[in-house]
Length: 245
Ligand SMILES: [Mn+2]
View 1 (cartoon, rainbow, N blue to C red):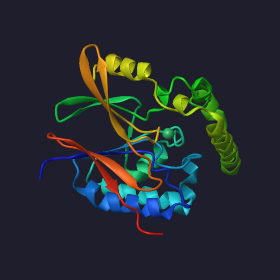
View 2 (cartoon, rainbow, N blue to C red):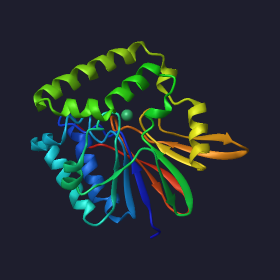
View 3 (spheres, rainbow, N blue to C red):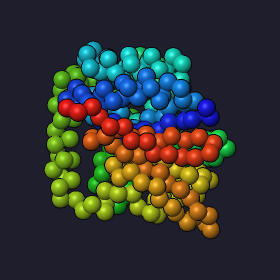
View 4 (cartoon, protein in one colour):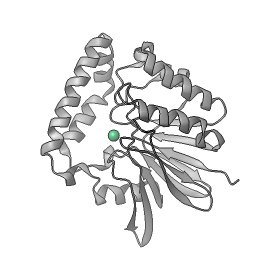
């Protein structure tokens, strides 16, 4: 059996979506258990209000299931735009290895760029501004000083606003821009890239400086689960059917 490295993103786990959660647990005990490494490229959780929310039964259970895998398989987790407050206590509890965004890894000899993907959506100027504000260390520090219940209410409000906006925003501005993609390939000297965030699973080719570069986009886990399986020989998208409701 050749070694395989697995990539997934945008699971958006929450207590309200038990089928996705079960599919994730099955993934952890199934394909992940024999992998060389597993990478979660952001938005593991629907939202994360702070590591003190590990007192929540659902969150604690997810962390505990992850820690079982992490005891034997390197489990890397990158922040998404919904769970960027995942911090040290979560990392310790779940046994995960925090992964910076972007990150460059060597996949069986192929230099590959990993990113959540929201930074590539440069046409969404309002979002990029919002992102800079909420990722600011001072803003985050002040936010984390609020009581957990208050933080959850604020996040709930922000999520409702972004859902409303999605109805009116043009589809194109919520996708990555080719220029941002090409810049990223060039800047990091990679010919492959893996990202999530846009919920538009596909394999794209980009011509950058005379070279053909591949960009693999991971799926969300709303209707089905999905992961990308990378071996020395091939890259394969694998779908996971959820149990019937
Ligand atoms: Mn996202």
